[in-house]
Image (cartoon, rainbow, N blue to C red; front, side, top):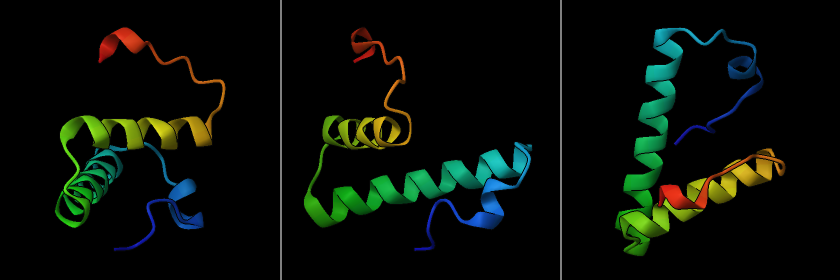
Length: 66
């Protein structure tokens, strides 16, 4: 699997195509986690949120969403 964020991707505009490709990449990552590690949906959400916090430690994530 190609890296989610490359220098080329960081320069792209947020077009419908870009968003669709990003969604497909994230879906593929989650499917890999489920297959490789037996992760359930809750564990996958936790990992995705961890990634968000690594990229933006000040992200305001509402814990009531889960």
